[in-house]
Picture 1 (tube, rainbow, N blue to C red):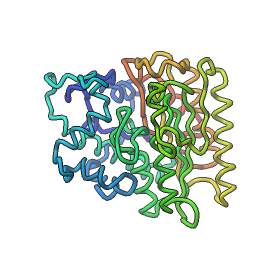
Picture 2 (cartoon, rainbow, N blue to C red):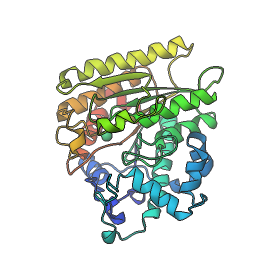
Picture 3 (cartoon, helix red, strand yellow):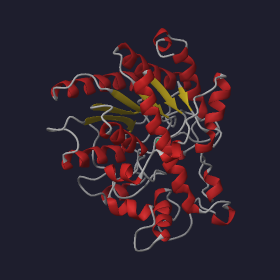
Picture 4 (cartoon, helix red, strand yellow):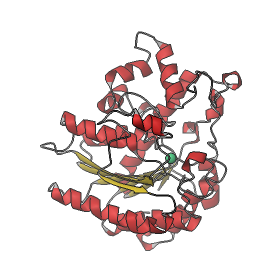
Length: 354
Ligand SMILES: [Zn+2]
């Protein structure tokens, strides 16, 4: 099942943000597949402030909702930081507010709606075993601020809501974006420290991230200034950094990682997960248009092999999975997802998912 709502698609340029993110990525995938997606109704109202505060800092939520002492200016500042729109010298960076046709603060509503799509994809996956949402994947968002084009962490918001509603106990998050799933790892760690996950709780999340060993964060200075116990220094439960030139080892490393998640689940006295959220970034693709993702260059065939490996692994074990698009830049970012979905639709495993 494919989930898509054109009204949830965000065009960064409407807000003066000049990132190479193609707003037509989802449309191109659907055109290639020639399928009609599921269109959720009123998805934008499904993620509430309570859902955001379940995983993020309450003061950060107050800034997003205009309740902080600075009022609406706090939201604008949070967005400028999340999208890296002001450089170290205080000058606009990839930001041309004079070209904006919508107020920057409106982006928060669009991002919240995207998060609701991720949550809906989880619900549909639990019902139908497989759901691919053509949106979402803001895995860099931290506990108390956004970064790396990610304001809030839709993955953790959706996962936390699904668990709070009693729909799932154990979840895995499998992140194959080119960049490390650093915000997700931090949020899981903090949730464990609060006792919301693991220990005596019936709720647990385990994360896997396979990513470029370098390239994120963007510079050594950021890394040197990072606080211990906070992203990006918090590893995922299964952390697989790949050095440049390691493309040939990708599938073997990924499979080893999936087995590692099984072992970690067993060590905690758990069986297979109730749900897996796959953060299916297309930016490891060799034709991706973001310079900072260039240290990992999978061919189209390797991208499809990556996704099919996860798809088969989960379907053989009857594990439900919600897939979200995550990173993918430039005019060819739609290709890995489209070719994976075509390959998956042609397999026996996927027929069970119809
Ligand atoms: Zn990425």
